[in-house]
Image (cartoon, rainbow, N blue to C red; front, side, top):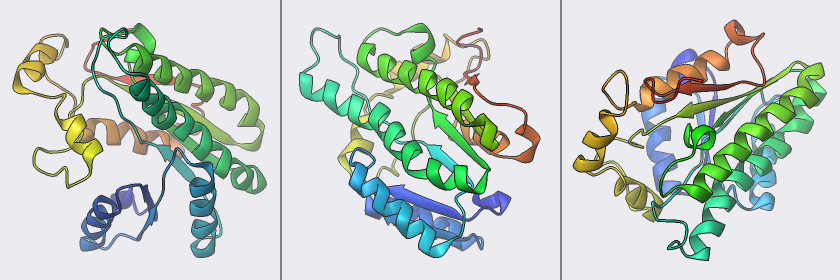
Length: 236
């Protein structure tokens, strides 16, 4: 987004990681602000939006990108994991979407892109609650697209399959990054690769390219869609 000249707000609970990304964007002249935000806490999200409006007169784009999971069988996963998955993966999207919609409705324009998952479309072993959350995100996006389309607000979801979250070694000190990194062992990567028609895992760039497209004027007539960027993992 920054390379497309968008002013970027990084709303991350991991302040150090947010500042790191901020520095990377600033290194090539991008305009960026980092605000520590807990997407599971509605007060934190609303405070973030108020801060954004102190810097900018409009909020044109929201990308709901926070996520967390831990692969365990449904009957083995502790309730604390269920609650964490629902809070981050579903409530985070609800909180952030609600917080920006009054602004977007008032300005009669906006783009919301949710990072969902193919797991939310087809189900997956050891990802029952995560998949339920992502199915909820897809359904939420479709419903919001119907409700706010009259205000020229586009709402879409991007559905990746297995995508290593960030390059190895750049997880910082925050525990969520380390836990997510543990899901992508070499054995799991190789097994996942064989499940794709294109015989490779997705990259962050693959996903970012679709997000940028959906936020652009070229996608002005696309709304209410759940678009797979998954190398042929699903074909629906």
